[in-house]
Length: 130
Image (cartoon, rainbow, N blue to C red):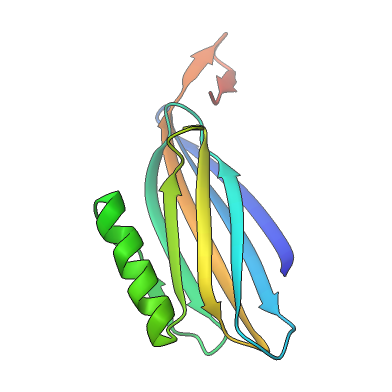
């Protein structure tokens, strides 16, 4: 499923913005569900989640309560819509668990996560993400 991953970090005035882009392809002849996890550091703030489909359509994330998000995900899967759900696991808060439902056959998509974190500098030259 995953065909490529890119990570970019930008530091401006003590704030790190790091972006993770993952590219997926469904090579099968039927819709699939994809589940994956990303590390989430303790001080991270999730800035955005954008999904770009192979036809160029982009979908931007919306933050809602966890139970409501799960309900929306389930309803869209039942309707046959491609949908993504990302939430922080209660048992492992250092992981962001993501599910792509109804990933259509013979299509691809890109998932782009952006996180921000205030970072510290030591000796005026070393930056540390935690």
